[in-house]
Image (cartoon, rainbow, N blue to C red; front, top):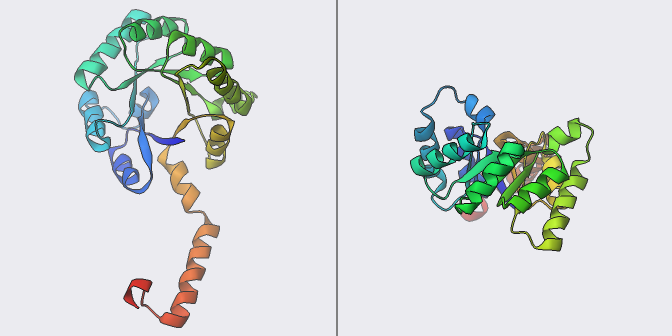
Length: 225
């Protein structure tokens, strides 16, 4: 079970990497847009510097055709590093690109997955990771839990090396369900992790412990007794 941050915000990455057990970072064009017109490769390299050379960093291609996707991948790997997971949308052209990139031993994440069949095809094409969109599938009336469970079962039955990297969440409950359904990894906006640990009932419990301790021992902490 691994948590990734779905953001390109440098301050958030630094802050939450220091707090949570974060495995890596994922980005996509919509996330990059939030940062404005950045120096793209310099920005991605700064993310790499923050998370370190061994943590997974997922960066998405922007071309829509296979040839363009492969060129984008080559630029990403050359200007950042060869350990980057290249994110490729699982479309007709995307499947072609995944096959091509895997023939070159590139790490690939199949993204924009809305169905089990999409995931199956990406797995068979050789994708290292597949990213089913949990909340977006639910908004379409699809059963996200069942789709992720089907992907996990196929991986188990046929021993695919693919990892399920669930994405597109609106709350921590969805993240929990994705893990329980069989996702090995989930990527989310940092605010979801923060909200999971700062809910009012949690803070009230901590405040109660603090008040009870101080009623007996004053301002001294355990270490100061």
